[in-house]
Image 1 (cartoon, rainbow, N blue to C red):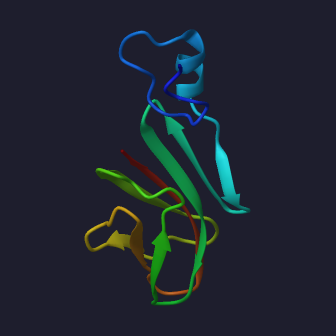
Image 2 (image 1 turned 60 degrees about the vertical axis):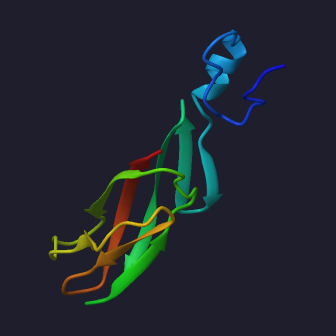
Image 3 (image 1 turned 90 degrees about the horizontal axis):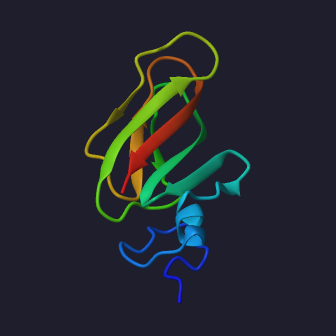
Length: 114
């Protein structure tokens, strides 16, 4: 019996098949039009698109909550100049906060964790 069952999970340490290894590479999932995640050998990579109003602290939920640790979250402004926005506070396993600077901005976000 295969442990991965096509869920993009970590393949067995011993006795795994080639199919287990291929399935562990992951298939990108798109839970909405602007958000995605992929599990690659147990490492979760996810990202999305978010609009944040002037001076607002915007909570963003992860598409696939992390089970152990968030290794990082990065922002990229989509249009316009950077305005000092940053990911602040402790990052939770299921969400993070964007502290927006001056002006409404759209951001791409990317995170990595396990």
